[in-house]
Length: 405
Image (tube, rainbow, N blue to C red; front, side, top):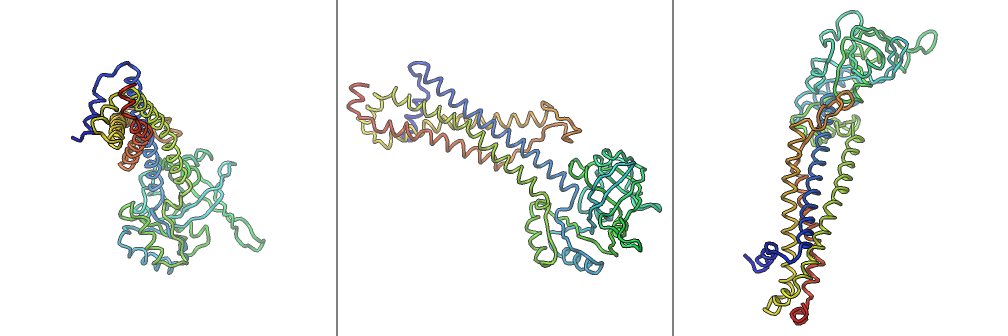
C-alpha cells in the first residue's frame, strides 16, 4: 500500500471534528449514486424500446431490400446474384406500389405489397402476425385475397370477408381515354405487427394479383433478403450492392427507417447528457468536501510537508480521496441501477396501455457499452472534482500551517 493511499484511506475512516464534512461527503456519495442509477435505468429502458421497435420492424419487412428487379428474366438473374452472398439465407420477390383503398364510402391511400407467402415468410415474420383469417385463403377463389393491417381495417370499418375496391393512381388507357384502374379484393385476414406505421398503411395481396394490378408481367419490383446474423446486415448489403451493380438500389432495414432510428439515437444521447448533470452536481459536492478537508487538515498537511512529503504527494492524497468517494458512489449507483432494471423488467410497476404502445410493460435492455460509458463518465467527473482542492492543498506553506493551523 502506497503512502498516499494509506493517508487518504485513514482520513476517510477517521472521525472528523464536526458533522458538516461528514454530511457533505455523504451528499457527494449519494449524488453520484443517484446520478449513475438514473443513467443506467433510463438508458436501459430506452434500449428496451429501441430493441422492441427494431424487432417489430424486422418482423414486418426483410433485413435487406433490393429494388429494380423488373422483368422475370432480370428477377431470376438478380435472385441468383444475391443468393451467392455467404450471409444470405433466404430471398423473396415482392411488388411494391401505392393504391387507393375504398370500402363503404371510406377511402384511404395505402402501400400495397404483392408477395408469395411461401417465400415471404422465410425473410420476415409476417406469417406469425395474423390475428384473424388465414393465409391459406390468400389466393383462393375468383376474387383475390387481401390482408390488411388491423389499424387500417379499423379506420375503414372493414372486417374479414369484406369486399373492398383498390384503385390504381396510374390509371389505364382505354378508348375513352385514361381511366382509373379498379379491382375488387376480398379481405381474408387482419394482421398485427405491433408497429403502427405498417398496421395503418399497408395491405398485402398475392404476387400475381399485384402484377396484374400494376401492369407487370411475371416480374417484381424488388427482392427481400434475410441474412444469417442481424449485426452483419451492413456488410452483407455492401457486398450485395457491389454484386448487383449501380442499376439496382440496395437498402437495409436501418436505412429504410433511418429517420426513426436517428431520432431514437439522438434522444438517447440527449438523455445521457441531461442525466450526466446530476453526477456533475455530485462531483461539485465532492470538490466542496475536499476543499473543506484541506482547510480542516491544514496543520496535518503542514506536518506531512515538514516530515518530507512533496507537493505532488499531497496532491495525490487528495486525488485518491476524491477518487474513493466517487468510486463508492459509482459502485452503489451501478448496483442500484441494475436492481431497478431488474425490478422494472420483472414486475409490472409501470403499466402501459397496450392499445397505444402495443406493450403492457416497460421493456428493459441493459447493454455493456452503456455501463462502460456511465462508469467512465463517473470516474472522470470524480477525478476532475479533485483538481482544484488538490492543487490548493499542495500549495500550503508548512511553517504557516503548523504555526497558524
